[in-house]
Image (tube, rainbow, N blue to C red; front, side, top):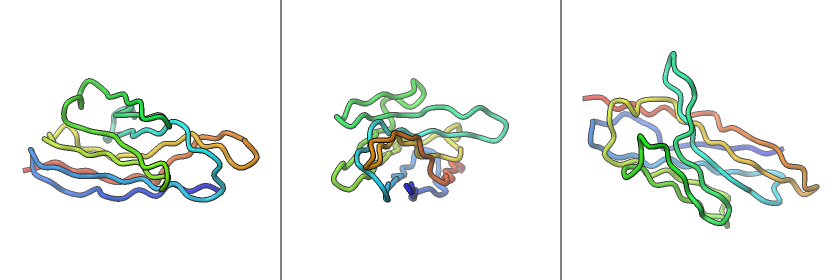
Length: 120
């Protein structure tokens, strides 16, 4: 009923930049909080950044000052601008969204994941 489609991952050198996108579509009345998670092989999935429908943001300490989360509510789309990338940023990045459908039922959805690799 609701789909989250991610794009923008790739291979970059340390110090480089990438911009991830996550577009929500389907039976949507309202998109509430959205966030970006990442998971490297053998490690726990961690919250990287989050943003509320009103634009309030939060970041993991490891990415503060380097990453910027934003959203376009008219397009139901969220972005993650990643600058000054480090090898330790290498992971699969997942979009997450808390969404109400037109019946006002709230569910959590995940994107398919997009790979970010930072290597020289």
